Length: 476
Image 1 (tube, helix red, strand yellow):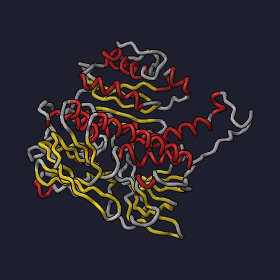
Image 2 (cartoon, rainbow, N blue to C red):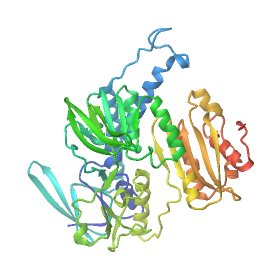
Image 3 (tube, rainbow, N blue to C red):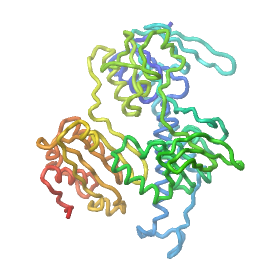
């Protein structure tokens, strides 16, 4: 029996951050992970996909080299640029391995004990870890702790669609392990994961079709920006089928066929591979939650504002809550849970939760969109600033998109910021901070922004909100 102040089940961005924070506050902490430290985010999600996104960006830039005055393959000739998919995947794997190794070293440097095995909560204060020793051998280790944090994440959702077990029907995890670039790909689901993969593989030359049951793509994204992005995605070569719930996946002449309903009747898409990207489910298998009497809503664990479950001494964070299934939210909740577990009372604050979509162009947002502001009966205004009027965007050759700001009339308080354009994932930080601090458009407008930079577009939108008109763009 090993004794700790806190035992954390799950070593993803929620769990390992919680472990580090616990150590920083002087607690003796243990981290239990059944696969690999870093969880889905580092190993099969955020990091590997963004490594591939960087490769795709480099490939697209090389294709447009002549536009920037760079000759590739000889002057006045077509660029001699190709896709080395195995090398891209190898680079992705190296990036993942480097980061995972760094995180493990960081956790150990904080004197957190790592247990590689499947953890089960036997009762409040007691965790059992089944450690696989290879082959049929395994050992059992019991860990005692006054506080336990559940951070076991999520898994790809699997809807009751016939044919999901056919060879070639993949989740994002299997897609990231491909050794050859598929000639065609059908993506079932038009959310963030599905659209990111669709854009990525389309850019590399795969023929891609997205099949989505809703009347629009990207549910988290501001609706108008999502519609604009859909048109861009179509011009890039991705075929989009909306209001098309999938009925079945079968084989047709040796190829996978996705059959779906539509307003025009039944439709079908044939492809070499099919990506199932219909969301994610909280993962709580084997934890013993039923025996503990932990309150749940379907698959998700219920907690209060202190990240406490209904069972004293047991907390839950991240994707198992089924609310904001984002790595950065899991990390934030990990810190909140640990501080509460160690007697530093702190409530979770979700006023400013940003999202990002890593496509070309990128999308990002935080706070309220027009639709949400209207539904809440708020008196608001919406202003926009196009990247076509940004000096930095023009110099980069990336002028597609806009900054869209939602502000409260009268006070000028920033309610939401939504961006489609270059480096939107970086620009959204200013809007997140503004909402968190209750800042106004005038606060941003009167803050000096470096020139020439992309954040100036946010400042210009704020000027339009605060003073009625931007400096570098006049709407006529």
